[in-house]
Image 1 (cartoon, one colour):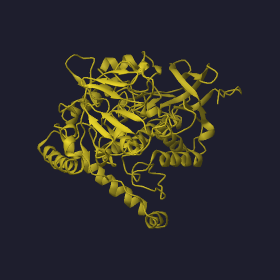
Image 2 (tube, one colour):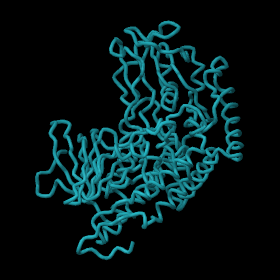
Image 3 (tube, rainbow, N blue to C red):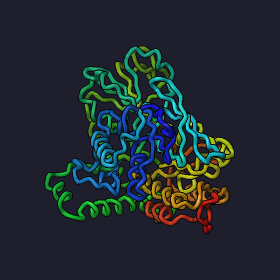
Length: 514
């Protein structure tokens, strides 16, 4: 869908980059709260859904219970499993988008390359490329939202020679369903959440599967199970049953926050979880792989994995788990420090680039680019995980520090949406045209959150994708994790600190009390 050539159709009050969970939640909440449907979504893919449209690899599923990994305002009594598959999540998203008539507002196959604040018009101007025609058009809006996700850009494999491989090689996020795995020698790089889903799903099809790993992860007992027909009937016809289930799952997940602080009570909690995980791993995985699998670092330092059949699959006679160092990809496989691993297919389940937000989009505010703004702090950051000073009327959904290590990202997305829509309420009520964050408020927030993060298990010494080197020598930066509870995030989003904000008032605007 390209630009509409009718008058003013290259403008809408709201524009959103992306069409996944956060974006659809924004469109629905705008209608629910304010009756506003003047919004345009720009999506580079051919369909809505973001991660859950792109992720098609075998075994792909959520690792957070569906009762919580869904919108609070759109509970679903028809989930088939506790941990739904990517297909089921995509179906759910389509249903919500259709209920709120959001699909006609989505421009698929469009890539936003630049967003610039136009002071004289008090608008954002977007430079959008239509991918099919390569035509670039301009689009303007009063309020701009980025819902581009956190784990978007596949991490490149740092093993040379991929271009020389004569078989098929691809990243898990770009799964090639036309590639046959039957009777093939398959190499899987990685052993995080994605690899733990792929390996048990494909090992029986392969002639031989070799999993090349570099790091270890704590793996916990499975929490997945199927919902029975009787349970779905209860959720559908007994009022309040879904809300009660969601609240119980929420409290259970929030309890896991106790593992993150580097305190005595946190250490005791981690020790109990570590013992549980280690007992499970030793009793389930082959003894010969225990030294390769069981970590020596604090549980919680890296994202935990709920087992979905991975450890049991390691007993397969046609599977080899190895930590041999990959030196080069050659035409017939992978050359390691111990020889050659023959391969017909190579699958890269090595994760995504982290600590990067709104990748590939040049965002220019009142005083310069967003990248330069973040560099001045030492890394990506945002006040209440969504706002930066000097970028008026602009919000990132699931932005810096919004991710949780213990609960649902959808809750964090909803908190971000609700916060943004409360912040712009004075403008919608005619009290001004532009709202911007004060620099001092941003600095105080960022200093506090980074200080609190430095006292958590994420900073306990293991190599983790939560942590990166900062632009300031001798310091690390965590722009991924939220150090507090989701209840805390909800409260902060419910009651904005209005003295942290500046509103540009027009001549006809109502008085702004702050």
